[in-house]
Each structure stands twice: as C-alpha cells, then as structure tokens.
Length: 434
Image (cartoon, rainbow, N blue to C red; front, side, top):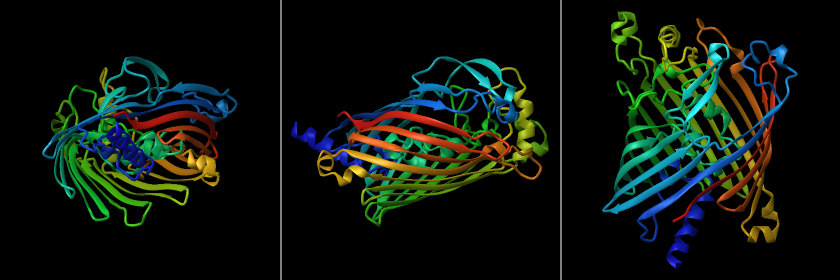
C-alpha cells in the first residue's frame, strides 16, 4: 500500500506540472517497480451559443443576425491509458479514445453541399486507437518507438490532455487548422540530454484530398479505409528546453508530400501535369509553458504551407463528385496560421487553508487569432475563416486530477459577418488509477 501511495504521489506531481511532460509520454507512468499502468482522462461539456447555426450564416449574414441561441451537451473525449513494462527496456503503451460518447451512425449537415443532410456511419473519428506502440529504451538519451504515435507538432498536440489548457474545449486555433490529436503510424527516436528533449519521427503521409477550407489539413491524417494509405511519408521533429525552472520552450515542425496519397493510386494516369503535383505540406511552430509564482502562462504560434493548392483543388472537386466518395469538394488554402496565448493566476494561493488543502482556483484569460484558409492569388477568398477569439473564465481544482471549468467566449469575425459569443461549462479529469 505504501508503494502504491508513493506511486500515486509521483503521478500527481507529474500531472500538476501542467504540460511540462509531452502527451506521448504521459500514457506511461511506471514507478517503484510497477509494471502495469492504467489511467486516462475525460471531459463533459455544456455550451450555449448566442449566434445562428444555419449553414448560410456567413454567405447571408444579415438574414441570420437575430437567430435564437442554441445549446448542446457533449463528451468530447473519454480516454483509457494502458501501459506495460516488459523489462529489459521494452515497454508497450496505448491510448484508446472515445469521442462524443461512442461510435455509430450520425446525421450530418454538409456545409460544402448547400446544407444537404447526410446519414453516415462514422469510422475512425468516434472510437480511435490514438496511441499503440512498442518502445525499446537504450538510455535516457536514446529511445526507439515503433507503432501508432502522436506527432507533437504545436502546443495542442504535444499537450492535449484537458488539464493542460484552461478553456473547456481544446484551444480553438490549433484544433481547427491541425489534426487534433495528430497521430499516425511510423517510427520515432527520442531522448533527453541535459535540459533538452528531442523527438524525430517518420510517419505515413497526409491525404490532400481530405484538406478543406474550414479545417485546412485537420482531416488529412485520417483514413476512410480499414488501412492507412502510405504512398507518401511525412517527417516531424520537436525540441523542448527546460533550462529555466518552471519554463518549457518548444520548437516543432512537419514536412511531407500529400498528393498521390489516396486510394486507388491511379492519379499517375490522370495526365503528366498532375503527375508532377506534390502537395508538399510544411509547418513550423513555437510554443511555451510557464508554471511558476502561482501563474500558468501558455502560448503558441503556428504557420503552414501547402504547395500546388489551386491545382489540387480543381482535381479533387472532380474526385469528390464520384458517388459515395470519401473526399471533400471544399477547397483548401495555400496557407494557414494560428496564434494563441492564455494566462491564469491561482487566487487560492493567497488563502492559507485552501493552499494547504492543495485546492486551486485559476482566473484566466485567453486570446487567439487563426485563419484556416489563406488563399493564393488565383484562389477565391473566404474572409469568414479569419477569426479572433477572446475568452475569460475560471478553473477550479478541488483535487489535482479534476478541474471544473467555466468561460465566456467571444469569437470576432470581419465586420460583414456576425460575431459569435458563447458560454461554456465543463468538468474534466486526468489521472492514473494504478
């Protein structure tokens, strides 16, 4: 019992570090000889949106200015960690994620098809194996990981558990323009050297036919098939520095071709001009987390580029017309960007009794600006994709592993569109059971 209590205390210290440990490592917390590790995280949320949810609210903004508010309950994520230490440096870890309460059929209103209702059987987005890998550890500085792994590109992907951000839902900018959580099959080599942690990886490439205006490459890592097409490959890297106590600074990036990475692989026969299209995706990101002096401050900036965007859009529109095609007819932009910063202060730190009970109450604010569709000169403009968001709220921690969240959010668009305020309330947990 004393060993178990010591292990849980160690895990609590790790979790309350608030994003000082990468998400890919948090699935595996072995200590004091324990071989099996079981844990997870989850969220339940309620939202009241004080703006129209009509599919034409941007193209005909004036008609929907006074539409009534609408509310919804959601279970964004419920995740189970399972990890085992086989000994001699060999470990296995997995992360099984249930999104929006499970899997099954769903009715969806397709924005790119003039609001047409479609009955779809969801695959790959409702119950996901987000991580599943075998690792061989040679030393603290050298670890080889093989299997289905998280790509820690950006702050959100590297630290996506719900206690690693103040908002009820994941940070909106990165969650919009990048896959979230970005996971794929491949190989990773990582380690820690002094105050630095590094990670380099090679994985299956993205699919340009799944890119779109409202989410840029967000859907490009998924697959509509029982397998992941891997005609092309992608490469990612990340470096984190922990030299200053309580401060982590990270730089990450991704590069890979996304064209000719679909099923069936017959684009080579569609003409010599199409054969030369690469759809090269290049992303750069910088982020930080400061957890000190009763403050938590987090920030990130991401910028991305896709080559041949206009040409690929014209091709995929044709492909999307094929009956029951899994590809999107919606165009995607040549570039996308997302910046965000949030800061919260623990007011309970000034109350001795609450501080001694390890309770925390963060009063926070967040600002972010993002654009999922920055077109090239020959592409059509859609200015409603350029959004700025202001958030203010509270996070209450009765114990280190549970957070009660409440916020007011104000999404601001260009002047010709209606702004989008909302109220969000949620509860989240993150911890290990054994």
